[in-house]
Length: 475
Ligand code: NBP
Image (cartoon, rainbow, N blue to C red):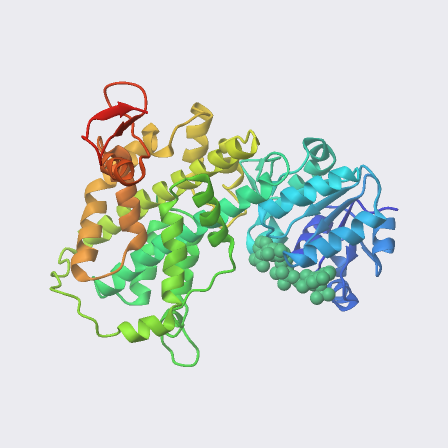
C-alpha cells in the first residue's frame, strides 16, 4: 500500500481535488462507481502526479497506507450513505472516512456517531470554492473527532488555499460542526449574492445603466473595501456578451434563480435556533419569488401607486448604493456569525468564530477583503456579542447609514424591490431600538393565553386577570 489518500467519487469536484492532492506530491488512490470516470481522469490528467487506479472498494482500501484516509466526493444524501457502508465494511478501526460533499449537518452527526461505534473516524468536511477552488485551493471546514485531525490536517492544509501563509483549513469542532459551518457559509453566500443583485437592479431601473456601465461600477468597487470574489465575478458576468444576439448575456438569461438547498437549510436551522438571519432568509425567499413564474405572470400590470422621481445626482446615488451594500453585507455576516455561535451552544461544539473568518479569507466563494476585519474583531474579542457593535463595523455602518436609508427610500418610492437591503436596515434599527413593540405582543399573549410577562421595574413573571377584574397577579 502506498497511497496517502484515496478519493472516491470522481465527478468534477472529486477529480479536481484528487488532482490537487497529486500536484502537492501525495500519492492518490482513485475510485469511482463507474470505472469510465476513473479512466477519463487518468487519460486527461494522469501526469499531474502519482495516482493508483482501482476498480473495487477492496482494491481501493487495499491501496491505502494506515491509518487509511478516504475522501468521499459523491452526490450528497443516499449515495453518501451507500458509499460509507461499503467503505466501513472494508476498513479497520482507526481509519478515517471524510465526507467532502454538501451533507446536511444532522446527517453528519448521525454518521459520525454510527462510525464511532465501529471504531472508525468520520470527518464531515465542508469544502467551498467550486470546481476551480477544488483544483487550485479550496477553503476546507473539517469537523469530526479532534484526534483524526493529527493524521488528516496536514494533508488537507497542503491542498487548501493560503492567505498570508495561513491555510484556509482548520479543525472546526466535533461531529457535524464542519458541515454546519459550511451550510452557514452558503447561507451568507446567498445573502451576499442577493445584495449584489439588488444593487445591480437599482443601477438598471433607477439610473438606467446598461450591463457594461454596471460592470464598470463593480470593477471600481472591487478596488476598495468591497473587494471580494463575488463582486469581481459580478463584473465579469455583466460584461459577458451573448454570441447569438450580441446583447449582454445577463439580458437574455431567464430571471428565475434556482437553488440546491443549502440556503434553505441555513434558514430552517436558524428558525430552530431562534436566530434572526433576515438577510439570508430574504435571499432564499427572493430566489423562490423569482421562480414563481405563474404568480409573476398573473401579477404583471398590477398598480405601482405614485412613483417618485429618479435620482438626478448619479455619482451621489452610486455612492449611496455602495455604502448600502457594504452595511447590508456587514449585517448578513453578523447574522451568520450569530448562527454559528448559536449552533455551537446548542450542540456543545465550542466553536471559535474567528477561525471561520480566517479560513474564509481565501479559496471559498465568499472570500472578501473585509473578512480580515472580522478576523481582527474576533482576535481582539473572541466573545464578541455582535459584529455590528465592534468599533470598525460600527463606524462603517455609521458612515453608511444615511446612504442606506436613502437607497431603501428611493427604491420604495420607485417601486423597485430591495428585500435584503430593507430587511437588513430594519434588523439594524430593531437591534438598536430602545423599545420594541414586543411589549404589546407580550400583552396580547397574556390576554388570550395567560402566557405571562415580565415587568421593567421588578423581577418575576406576571399575569393580568383579563377576564376578571383586570388586576395583576404574580404568576
Ligand atoms: P455530483 O454531486 O454530481 O455526484 C456525482 C458523483 O456521485 C459521481 O462520482 C457518481 O458516480 C457518484 N454517485 C452517485 Br450520483 N450515486 C452513487 C452511489 N449510489 N454510489 C456511489 N457513487 C455514486 O458530483 P460533484 O458536482 O462533483 O459534487 C460532489 C459533492 O461535492 C456533492 O456532494 C456536492 O454537493 C459537493 N460540492 C459541489 C460543489 C460544486 O461546485 N459542484 C461545491 C462544493 C461541494 P458515477 O460516476 O458512477 O455516476
